[in-house]
Image 1 (cartoon, rainbow, N blue to C red):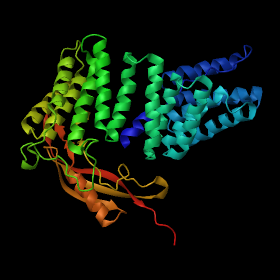
Image 2 (cartoon, rainbow, N blue to C red; image 1 turned 90 degrees about the vertical axis):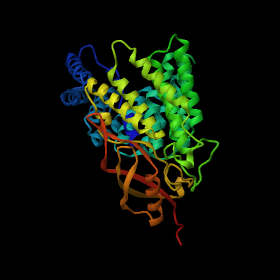
Image 3 (cartoon, rainbow, N blue to C red; image 1 turned 45 degrees about the horizontal axis):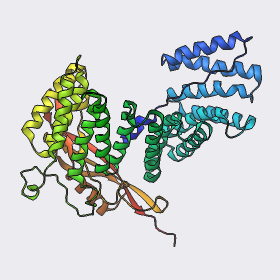
Image 4 (tube, rainbow, N blue to C red; image 1 turned 180 degrees about the horizontal axis):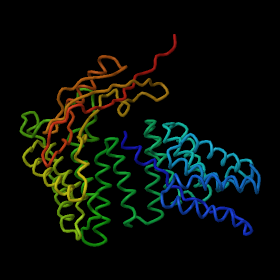
Length: 443
């Protein structure tokens, strides 16, 4: 779930200030602030942002509507500096001024609401974040139309907040709507749809709907092909197709509903128990096609080629083909080294892990009736991508729940750490599982 903290970064488009032509001092301070902010020199931008608020207060008063933009800019600067508590107060003041001087549907509410929402999320206050961001999205739809593209920058952190709250129904709804917004804005065959399609497909992967995810990746591939020959724009779709096959192999498809005692295909293909089942070869073909496309690119994108070769090596780990996995990891490491960073291979990466039925991602208990517990597990990832020496190191869950998490981790697969081109063992890897039980009714 960490992967969701990467999509909460603030992308506010700072509004234009309300500046009187006879006020060169405020204009000069604003330009100074904007120049520093746009250069990402946020610490230096803070002083002129504060000064602009002070000058505006002196000219118009502490409750004037002219303060909304300077306050929002100041809140954004605090947010970028990680001073989130201060940002919350400034955004709230900006919102209060609009609400006191205009209607609740005033356009000037959009930016401070968005800023306040993402700041709440950065503080881990996802309940507050979802409420504020939903208000911003609804306001955007009311002002600019149901399918306006401007709401996309607010939908991303809203969805991430829903996911953090395990409110998957609302997350699904907004994911679907985001794609509809992009289709309305760009058309159904535009290359600008590739990003929204990939985001929605990854959501389906997250919730285990692999066929639906694969259909979206295939659609993205078709869009690229319809605009000419296969290009590097197709790589994400090709990697996605392979990823869905791999996840489906381990976790089962929608037509094979999970049960508490369902076995996982986590043994090499030579294992007798899985001799009749293997990874779909279309996945390997998709990855090889992606590697070939990137290998022909001029100038070469060593980083992206390295990442794709890592996917291919991971595929071989999951299929139990260790010799080919080691060759692919070596090639990937060399490409990443040429690109300037082998950080992708510096730590093990989770490839396949199916949480126990009581986990927050699989439990069917209603959130209002749920009580959450945690299980922290430590283990070693072997050079072959297996887990060993699995132990629970901290937990407030029952012994049975701890054993269920340990059992799930033992069946997991990881991409191993790669050092100087060779896969090596990594002890001390940890996993935190959120376990849900039904809240006891008061006696």
